[in-house]
Each structure stands twice: as structure tokens, then as C-alpha cells.
Image (tube, rainbow, N blue to C red; front, side):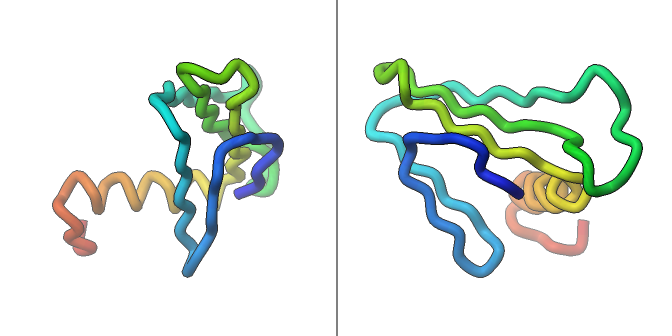
Length: 85
């Protein structure tokens, strides 16, 4: 995962990213128009936009491995932290 720009406070610890904004935010998932040709190319971008700060934008570029890890983490969260999903 590569943070390409941002004003939010974020930390990465033990392979997990935590993002904090001082107010509300909107989360967007953007995918490229063309299918990526390799696993290392950008497969998706997560964009977090602050509701109160027009400069409060953070973008995370995800390659195949990053997108897979995010999907797995979301499935685990949906299952209440059950890693057998």
C-alpha cells in the first residue's frame, strides 16, 4: 500500500494502517478504467476526503497484494474477527 498524498494522521503498525481525521470524512474506492496488466500495478485507490477541510484528502494506492489484504481484512471484520472465513 502506498500513501500518495494526504493530510490525515496515519500510522502503520504490524501491517495495519490507522487513519484519523479530526472530523467526518467520506471514503471512496476508485478502480482504473483498464485492467491492470501485472500484480504490481495499481488495482484500486482508496480516497478519504474530510468533510470540513478541503485539503484533507488521503489517497492509498493498492496493488494486487494490497487489495487482497484489504478484502481479507474486511471479510474478517464482517465475520466478527473470525479469520477462518
